[in-house]
Length: 384
Image (cartoon, one colour):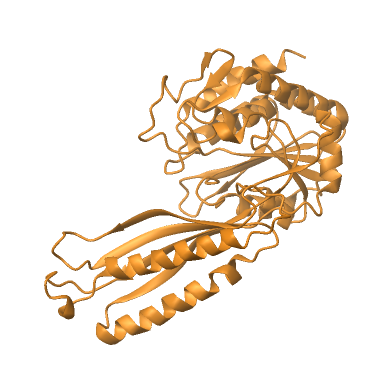
């Protein structure tokens, strides 16, 4: 077998060159992966987005039998806008044993390693199911349709490994995430005549204050026994906009927030008082100006992954990595919870550190890349 790490490095160079920032299409990358797999005699299946601008891709490598292993990663990356990079983010640049580039760590490095191992996986008596998604970075939006298709068409896999960066440690739990947009419509008037209008900005500020107090309460009531860091559910406001001029009562304001909850915390219960406040404000505003109001819309909802139910996957992956440290949990959200929710025993394990993800000069250490290559080779041997 040729040097798997060297093969994976060539593939990584190609994958990084595709700008698959979530706002862009990933179809060029998907087409390249399809061609690569076809060259290995592997058929693949697209699961396209509603507007056909993006696609998931899954493929079975090896015999089409039950008991296989899913290797899953997302093809999209976060933006580089406004970040100060020391090299081209769309070209892999090696400096001091580190592979710099947007997505090297999160998580095209894992995808490159899985693709490089295809010739080895083809020899197995149990299959590897490759599963590459879109729009993970904007709320894990793409994977559910792919998971549904895989569940309907594949012989039952034994487990799923999601290759988010964990320094090749086994992770058995992560927080879920819900993202909501709040939109306020006011009534414009001269800012000196506040009795004749209704400022959407002032209403939005009141609601954002309520969310800030809610976030403070989550922190103050954290479960000290929680394994997560931070231990509590977290709420942050990510974007906000509104108004046209300082002397005009704003007609429109909008802000977006995310709530990340451990497996034992129900996000709907957390947000119930806030949603009741929104409904009451909406009715009050419409009494004054019928066209005014406030609405809240859920943009995404990715479930958490709980350690319970992952034991089979955990023990299998530990045998491959040699990791005997206590199983960990992570505070970021991932697609692992979606695979687990579909009934798969699931863990997260991949090369690199999440601390490098989303950063300028994002990198994956060569040493971690090599460990990932060893992992893929051991997986091929285990399935043989």
